Length: 86
Image (cartoon, rainbow, N blue to C red; front, side, top):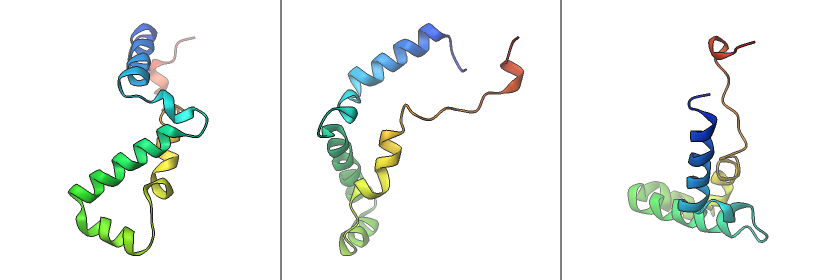
């Protein structure tokens, strides 16, 4: 929708390989664990009060970020009808 199909393909390949997103869908979900850990560390570093609140209430990153992590390639942007050709 926003670029050619060739560019979209190579963007996808780059995300899978360079951002290590392939492991999100592997057996045992190692990517979910890894990316949740990264999100947790970012919250801890940049939002320490929120991190403390989460810890007090036993909220882990998987609880609020798993749908976003799994949905990285599953959601579809709505198409702008002006781009639709017959």
